Length: 625
Image (cartoon, rainbow, N blue to C red):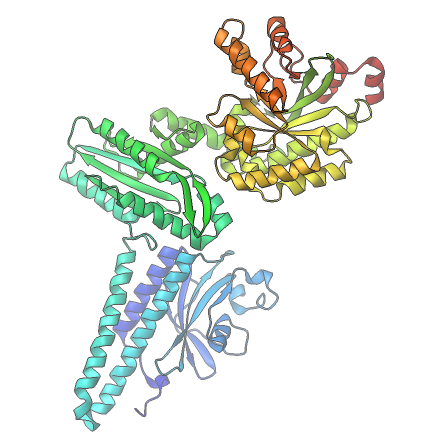
């Protein structure tokens, strides 16, 4: 053994420069302000190498005494990863010196010489809360191994210097070991270089590499260039339910499906979590038709039910297409395709093309989303109520609660405009609970006026069923206002079952057990309406208004309405005929024994006070006021 200790081994300039490159790459990929390599000497630890980005507050050579207060001391003593998402939330670390420098989150790993003696740590620090995802953790683990390989190489070189003079007969053996270490180092550096152009999990070209391919083809003079932007629109929902590891496996599965298609003149890349890009190149005149065929093929192959580790779930894909008509740069082409993908999701279509008016629509939607954030707090939303009339008795037996938005800037915004924006932004959860709370509170106010059979129906969005606490929250609201569950009905459309039927079924069965009525809205318009009646615990079906609208002039609509009512009656389900606007329509559905009628013929949606005046008698109205 050499008489030198690891503390005496100097790290040469070329190794330090490589470490600098590693830290810069780490901070770039992980999008964090500070990456450090710390070295322990005696009872002090110093900043030995740092990332060169301007927002890194640490400087080379700065030392701290090891007194048990530092993140790195904990890493060194435990010889394990240390992850602190937010030191301000942790009494043990909130007085850490790094907090004073604005660094509140930390991820660090130990660095050791091959002899097992401590060199120091490699770490990432951030100015905001950061739990560091799987990709960031893999990167720092890879760089830990790379640097420890450097350290092993340095120690071997040091040993070699001491042993050459003493044991020349072992020179060849030592050189062989050195060669192996150099090979490992070369492999690690090649891996790092590959990461600059490839996605870590799938191995597909990343965003930067796809852009490079695009620029190359444009410079070659390729005439027809297109982009297909593919988005798994329920990716976040799947990740929240299955976790990061299984979701990464889904990402790899989609990538494999893409690469197995073997389509000519395309380049496939992974753009981000749940998003892929396909570049198309062609000199043919039928390029757009070719792109449409590929988009349809991808839609058919990629979406549908997937099974990973015995967990079955539905993958929903949307695709947007854009074409290089005006010599767009890559970022513009990708942005256009992304806009078209969002439109595909809103229209529930397999794919959509980018058009200039879509950009204007996107700007309008972004403005609406920004205004909606404060709309609830500013009391811009309210409920209106439209009556349900019982066919046999002619009595008002309930009402549908309908959400309305009166914006001081946009005016009265139609629900079909703002509901989709709320769903896209996630605000639908807050809006949904506002509607439930306001409707249940109104039932409580009207409880002493109407009899116990009076109920209010509330529409639920598919997004709300992603909240596993939905049924529990509804039960809490009913208990708070002391309202019987039978006084509440929830209305669903077929789209509610697209993401995860099991989660939806669980929530509906819980509500049914409470005594809440479940209604299938727009019945007859979806392709799976009949199968859903068999799977899910419905009490009521609502005949879509499009059938009612046509019964005066369409014999086919008359037969459909008659068949729906007859079938529902045979299944023991109540029937609501909505959209009734005149006496002829009302008489027709009554003759078929529809249970409940709804529409302008019986009353338009109005605020609670006007509903009471119109549908309570004078004594009841006085009691209300």
